Length: 568
Ligand code: ATP
Ligand code: MG
Image (cartoon, rainbow, N blue to C red; front, top):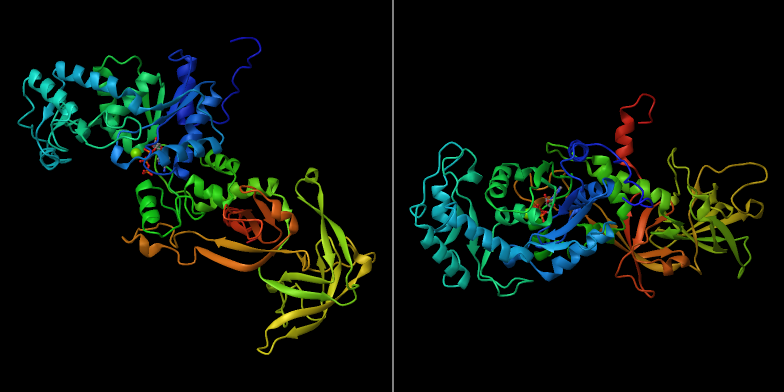
């Protein structure tokens, strides 16, 4: 290490995987840590993948190693260039960089083929003519051993010849497979002569028509790890039972390194479904508008919704890594995201359901600018100037004609503060023929400019507002959970659990003029309403905002409940 390279910082936190990695370094089993994130390009990444990305790239960063992005592209019928591109964009957006190490299992097809031949020669693999169904029935069950295929003992030369002809395209899909020759009586079903290669006449996004046989996940994964010098191959618990096969292949092939597979619990979240297969169905059947629909648990959906990458990383840190599966409350994700947004999101005024206010004693035609802080949590964010005039918009539900005892906002005869502007008092209520309130008449107190009274009186409520002549119209899309139950599909019918109110579109909203320039991806706080961000559909002439999250913090409340003296 050169003197100007600082040593890697100590790991931010310990978990059982980081402990293993630290010990491997300490005890000299490795000098450089290499991890990989291995998505199959058959869909967009979701928040579960984000956990794996933060773990793999995080460990590499913390221990001064590197993390590869490797596409597990062994299933050409389900894989597309669109997914390859989207996955790279999402990993980058999350804040991680694989440097030169963008790899594909398909880069290794020739090597994998050679290793398959190696196994056949060693009597450790054979071409099987049984159909997929027959292989399944021969496999046995957890309590019964499997039965040998009649082709299990076919001569090595015959298998070599057939395997070569499989590659040459002589046989149709499913006619034959290559299987490892391990143990049909193994208590681990994955060791009962697992399939290593199958015939798939399909064009591959990268290798085109060069191949019509493709390795299975099990045959490709560990060997790709070994080729790349991956030291720690981190995967989710469903692969635990595959580990003996992973190790068997590494032991029986002349691979250049010995990676170690370690399993961790996958992320499950309430109100969400984390499965590309299911998400693809939601997209294809039109239950959402696409993979990046703001209601989707995909990284691109969360981004469009306004979740900052930092919030997703903070969530990954918060939930940690465990060895047994569990379900995380969606409130924890929202809590992590709100914590970041509360600190970083500029405050802006917007009125979602506008009610006109006319300030009768304010001069007609006059406009003044009041100074409003951009973020009370962060004085360095500065202030902005917002136009105030005689006709204003306030939120319809900030007024009640006959307020119940705990309603402190505007009502006839009552004074409230308009944030950073003036105190106003409601003097009259104008209604239309149907009795609906269409306008409030108010007076203001010129001595309260900026929001404080010289005599020290303090209204019980502070409202947000907009000058009617200056406000810009906009569409606002309010989002709620895509599913209405915490465990979608538990009753057997996933679609029945779709939340019919997951999206509400408001057409008549108004926003501050400064929001005309807000960039896609820039999440702001609409004061008192929540976090919002411009949607990619937004145009200067037709602004569109998505509600990222409401301000209310249910998770914090749930936690506070347990504490003595906490407000319930
Ligand atoms: P899905 O079931 O959504 O299709 P997958 O596991 O088939 O997911 P891959 O593309 O194979 O998707 O996953 C890439 C990596 O992400 C794997 O190492 C996998 O273990 C990890 N991963 C997938 N889902 C989760 C999850 N919910 N939590 C944590 N890691 C996950
Ligand atoms: Mg998979």
